[in-house]
Image (cartoon, rainbow, N blue to C red; front, side, top):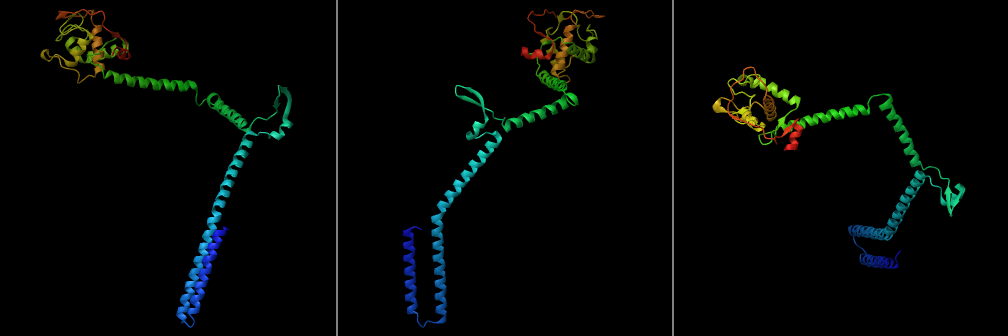
Length: 297
């Protein structure tokens, strides 16, 4: 123990014992209650002295104990990692390499007959098991195949494409509408024409209440943009209603494109020409489907 601390403790005890003796000499003949109180004070004092001694000893040995504990933990971790590294790599200690040295020697470089490390062998065995399971699932059992996966992805892509084109069709207006030439688009346009337009323009476009749609004369313009606008907004003063509440933009584009295909045909009973002669501009855009519309926007 520290000599300075020892001297301090001894001095404290000497003073305490001396004071206790003097107090005892002056207390000769004191009452029983006073003696009991004195003994209680002495007991408390002794307990405090023991506590001080215990704390002093603890303060002295604590740093050494903590240091020893930390060193033990570090050694344990190092030992555990070294042990793990030795097992996973199966390295031969350097002092034992002479026993696995081969005869190959080139420029002082020797070849050792080390066995494959366990971590490599574990990976190799796992790949074998995976290969067997893969062959069983995809080739032998036939529960799933790459062809099936491809077909599923293509189907998903077609759905995504249709949704995308449907979204684009809602953005068609008179500023970007183009003439559609796809068979499916024109067939849908013809179906809508027969349902909604034939009553005024006749099924073959020859005209009845409405004008003839097969000649080159137009009351409100004969371009795809003009026809689309006429369908969308109508001509209220001449009895043609606006169809933008009943048809979506794509449907109006399909009907307008079908009407364009009627030009040059021969109806059964054509109505006399009305309006002004219209000639298509050479640079008029055409497209085969709605996908091409995106490139023209």
